[in-house]
Amino acid sequence: MVSEQKQQLKCYSNRSWYIRLRQSWSLIPLCTSLAALAMGWYLPMSRFEDPLENSLDFFRSIDKDSAWVSHREEVKGAFVTSWDAYTKYAWGQDRFHPISKTGSQMSPDGLGWMIVDSLGTLMIMNLTTSLSEAREWLQHSLTYDKNQDVNTFEMTIRMLGGLLSAHYLSTALSDVSSHNDHIYLAKAVDLADRLLGAYKSKSGIPYASVNLGTKEGLRSHADGGASSTAEATTVQLEMKYLAFLTENEIYWRKAERVMEVVDSHRMQDGLLPIFVHPDTGNFHYKEIRLGSRGDSYYEYLIKQYLQTSGQEPVYREMWEEALAGIQQHLLATTKHSNLQFIAELPQGIGRPQSHKMDHLVCFLPGSIAIGATEGLTEAEARRLPSWNSKKEQQMQLARELMKTCWAMYAVTNSGLAPEIAWFNANDDDGIRSSSRPKSGDDKSAWKKDLIIKPRDAHNLQRPETVESLFLMYRVTNDPIYRKWGWKIFQAFQKHTVVGDGEGYTSLQDVTTVPAPQRDNMESFWLAETLKYLYLLFSPREFLPLTEVVFNTEAHPLPRFKQTRFQTGWKRRIPS
Ligand code: DMJ
Image (tube, rainbow, N blue to C red; front, side, top):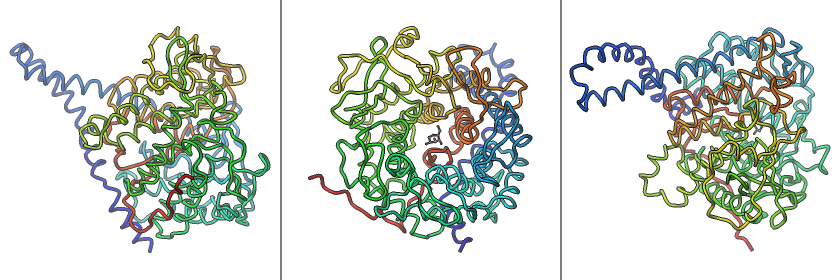
């Protein structure tokens, strides 16, 4: 059975991109030497001839590429420093406090939080010794057979997603590939079977928590027992890929039922309130936002469509509807610089906006871009008959929002973004405006428009902006996104390294320099932020967006043309 699954996966994990990539990158040092030789010999003879100009362009581009190669190595260095500090002081523990050099657990003998979340980055950065230590720990020390309550969503995106991605990457990346290694998949199946208990609610909406030992789903202790909308609707990529691998339909159906329930309400313009109750499947409260508790519902709409390579049009339809709703009700513009941002609706549609945007919302420009081009470059997508003015406009929106997310970094003294920004909004903007002026690049105008409140000034090493920079770079090919990513990385280097150089940490306040530090390194620093920066500076052929889709924790999973399991529901016609 398992070897069949491996066979099947292999069919879909085309390794040609990886082989092409290794070949082209190994040529760079050779080409650079040839360039030096060729220029010394050829330049005096024919400097006005076009062929030389062409070849110089070629060599100039190699030079530029080699700068990105070295930036990529610096990101890898930051990962190695972070990882080494963790292994030295907190090996096997779920949390790491790099200033006090201590670790702490989320469960008596740990859940694998740091190690499992890092597997994919270890593979992508080809850190084979660290990877085999991690794998060893996983095999001998990690068990999910424990009487422990866990958050359903976090366990799914970080642990299940981490294991499944490690399984995929271990077949797709030749440097780390081991085709007979089933450890990651076996652990994933064991974990998923425990998480299934969360879906045993009356409505099919998963409970916020589940006990890994008893497999019993547990209502949230807060919010009247309701689950977060984003949490309930951000388990589908993982569960569907597991169903695809194991051919066990239950994972598919449980995850998909959630989408049917939330969509059955046909909420106005595709915008969902941020709480949904597992007993009734009804939404609680009216608050709508794309930040915490709302964000990845929207992200997983387009990513589910991409995961099954366009085989499930219902998710494209839901995404388009939601994106139009976002533009109609949440998009706002700042007063001095015309920056576009995504406001919140604390009391629902038709009520006043709150001009606040979480850093979490910065996943959106990247998702819009991959939605418009389906992983192709913009230039490639524009040549398709399916390209239209709506997609053109979506790309424009993605560019504008990307700039706003960059501005959240550019305006602070540390060069790092706060957790939340408030905006000085254009009063005339209202909810009606559809054609908006382009934003300016004047940083002093940005500063007038962006307000950082002391309680929101911390930085948790979050990935959303660099995630979108990576996706925007891949789609548009515009080097500006690499440049912004490099500046952000430099700011992390300057302000988040701990005093003795052993590790990176979160910040208390990005507005002051030196930025006061907190004593905590998040697992998504390793799993997401550094991975996306590394990929931003990698050649575009490495993990191409036409072949992979990243889960919300940056774990790459393959896109596949599923045939075995069909979407099991149809949208209700609005009454
Ligand atoms: C991650 O765990 C995931 O990206 C999630 O969707 C949102 N929050 C964190 C990172 O900020």
